[in-house]
Structure formats: C-alpha cells, structure tokens
Amino acid sequence: MDKLIISVAVTGGSYGRDDSPYLPISSSEIADSAVDAFNAGAAIAHIHVRDEEGKPCHDLERYGYVVDSIRARCDMIMNLTTDLRLKGGLSSLKLAPEIASFPCGSANLGEVALCAPPAILRDLAKQMQAVGTKPELEIFHDGMIGQAIQFDDQGLLEQPLFFQFLLGISGGSPADPHTLLRLVDSLPAGAKWTVSGAGLAGTPMATLGIMLGGHVTVGLEGQLFYAPGELATSNAQLVERIVRLAGELGREVATAGEARSILGLNATRQKRPNKEAQ
Image (cartoon, rainbow, N blue to C red; front, side, top):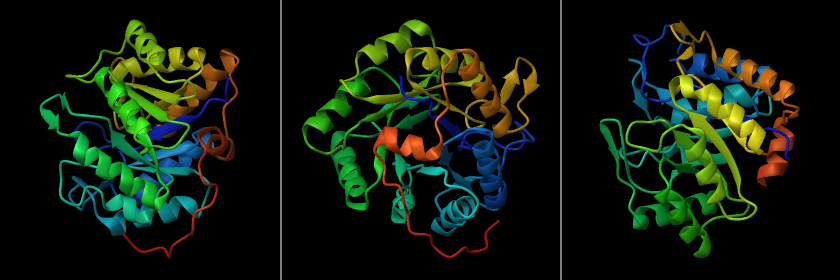
C-alpha cells in the first residue's frame, strides 16, 4: 500500500457559525486551521473562502491570502475549490493550484443541483491542463466514474487519476461499505482515491479507506461532529483521530512531499506576495 494521504476539507460552503462556533470563517482563520491540520498530519488542504459576512465566495485576493499564508509556514498541498454554479467559480485556477476540485457530472446534492454537462467539464479539464493543476475527480454517484474514464480516454486527464468519493450526501451514493467497495472496484488500474463520509459516517468510511489502501479526507466542511452530540473543536482534532487509526491499523501517514510523489504532482510552486484579507 501507499502511505496514507490525509486531506483536510477546512471550511466548505454549506455550514456557518450558527452550525458550529468552531468553523473557520475569515481568511486568517482558514489558513491557521489548515496549518494546524498539517501539523497534526494532513498533507493536503481543500480550501474554500468566505466573504465579510461569512458566506462562500470566489474572491481571488482571499484565495491568494490563504494560499500564501499557508505556504509561508509549511509545504502543504493546496487543493482549491471550483464552482460551476457561480460566475467567478473558476477564479481559483488563476493561482495554478497543485490540485483543484473537478465534479465528474451532474447531481442533486441535498436541495442544490450541480449541473456539470460534458462540454463544460471538457473545457474545465483543458483549463486545468493549461496551468498544470491535477483534477480531484469528485464522485457523488457511480455514473461519474464512467464519465471520468471517458475524459481520460480523450486525453484530458493526467496519470495517475485521483478520485474523491464523497459519500452520504443526500442525492448521492450512501456511505456504506458495499458502496465504497463497488466504487473502488470500478476504478481503472493505477488510479488513486480518497474517501469522505458526510457527518458521522466520516470515521467509518475513513477506517475502511485506510484498510483498503485508499486515502482519507476529513474536515469541518462536512463533519461538524466528532461524536454523536459532540461538536468537533477543530480540523486538527479530526486529523489526529485519523493518524491514530492509521497507526493502529499499521498504515504509515504520508508527508506532503510523499503525497506529491504518490499523486504525481509538481513539487514546487512560485510564491506570491502576501496581501491583507479578513
């Protein structure tokens, strides 16, 4: 097995401070939380940013501040979000992140519809190729794997393919062992994958992912609770549990440098001047 790559989804765009007082909202809080998670064992940070009111936004200056603040303190891999639903939702690609989210098709996610037709996704894949960004191939249901394989056959993706199974979201595939095993069995040879279970499914899915030789994504974006009735107090707390589980199960945790090697990423990125943002 590869060493275990732990990704942390720091804040997302679904929850707010009314849901948890521990959710990082400002750009400085998001950067600090990512660095704390890195020190706990995470190699990759999946980044969303928020505006002054705490609402999701795609402000390039805020992305730049968060990325530069993290890079100034550690060599964590940046995985920036994209959003096909909103104007400016692809602005993060201007920073040429090592990884960015790539939804592999359309889906109903709770009350929100993600509309991602093939033509738009082909254009997104080309944009990522142009800046040297690896797509994190987001899989909400089984049909998305076939779409990703088709894009790979068309030369739009780089090896090794990197899949993210997002399970347990209303409208998508459930977070259970049968589903994860089926999805993993559907992957092409040589593909890498990570799994995230929504809510309290996060730990069971992570445990199975560790045992199957995949990788793990945790974080306050989709896992506000550490245990039933107990809010997670930080992203680092969630990462620390995965590190303990990996140790108990005999799986060594990858550093950021080792994760780059496993995923075939570029090892260096040009730094940009820091700018103030809140």
